[in-house]
Image 1 (tube, rainbow, N blue to C red):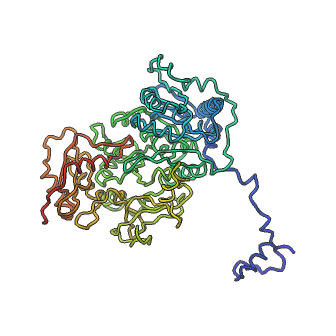
Image 2 (image 1 turned 90 degrees about the vertical axis):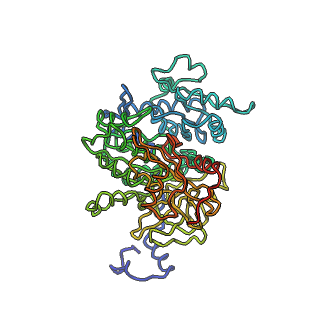
Image 3 (image 1 turned 180 degrees about the vertical axis):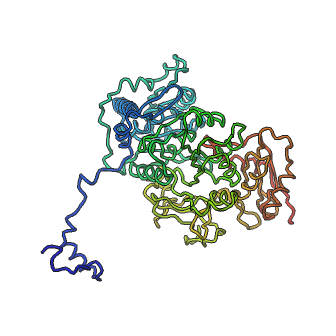
Length: 578
């Protein structure tokens, strides 16, 4: 019989047993509706480029120095490079590495490499040769695209291979100023790959959306780098998620201050293609270059770690902007004073949280209109929180590491941040033990970050688990101490780590750099007194070390493990019990 015959109109409001529901399902023909080729195409962000060439074909896609490409040109160039990669016998399952700053080639390779069926692996340009060699061998990289300024780094890294190891092919990414004789050590130049490639190349679509697409190595700020693998589906989800959560409009002008080799620029290489944006590429930057690019190109959006915000807000060029620039920050909890100073210049700061293992930001400080009526300092404090899960994240929680139970939503009780969702990595390359350790049987990904949950459901990170200072049995958040230090008018950068103490076990040790041009430089005693007036006694730094600059990764994260080693080498302090 037909499904709509002899059935009451309010059938869905009635109660049925499981068996009755199964029968009803069969009668209505629901069991005949199954996935088919027409509705089961694997999700991939690579199609965004083809659409951009159709919709925004004559619009600028990439701007770099005197070079401007349109979206139709970028589409063609990516197909040609993908064709050249495939002609080398490189394809499905093979890893292709890229060592380059934010130049057009690295943008194009975010599409071209996976379009050839291969897996893209961006490598930090500031790593040493030994580390790069380890990563290249660990990934079994078959081909390396190398910016000319990193050529000596890669040649040294490859020279460290064992004698019988198969060495990857090298392709040189050369600017106009690159010496012509450099090409002798390389299989080809990047532009040669473009010229030889077939613009009609049929790019390789994934057989499954779970096929690996990206390999990223973690920054190693807390431990040895690990190879994080993401699939086409995960990258599609995080890209769409990132555009929606940040409310990115069509055709923005995006300034590349965030390195594309860092978690693929938080997914925005593919995102800019989806919305037909203009990518302003910079080989290097400082505050004056950023402000110049904003004025010249009419920049509307940019991303950066809190160190970039600090740079912009402390720069002599930091005049109020003629029009607002949206800036998305993450990577470390931004101090509220830095947020306040940055927004006073006309930047509109959005704050989020993510990891290499999530391919981008999956938690954001979703702003509520009523907060705009609060005092500026209170707005900055609220915006410093990481926030709530984005639409692409299934669930987020803060749990007790021992029991696994959710902590109290009181903004005080510390726990480990756990996540689950479609943009969480497939796992760590060649590390099943590490994968199992962080992706537990209970369905959660354990981040290793320590945070609290506020009563309104907003998350606030307090520390990396390795950065929590345990002083006299009290868990002390280094982030809270750093926020106070950043409010000192002479402090440019601050990082707090544990120093061994004979009585308390550990005490806070502050490493501080001062703003350029500071005439009256504070003493360590003055910094300690400043902190004592604003913090509980047990949180006040007992040691202050002044440095010209704090050690950082290429993405602006302060390398606390380096500072911890320095603090440890200083020996145990002898702090008074009072």
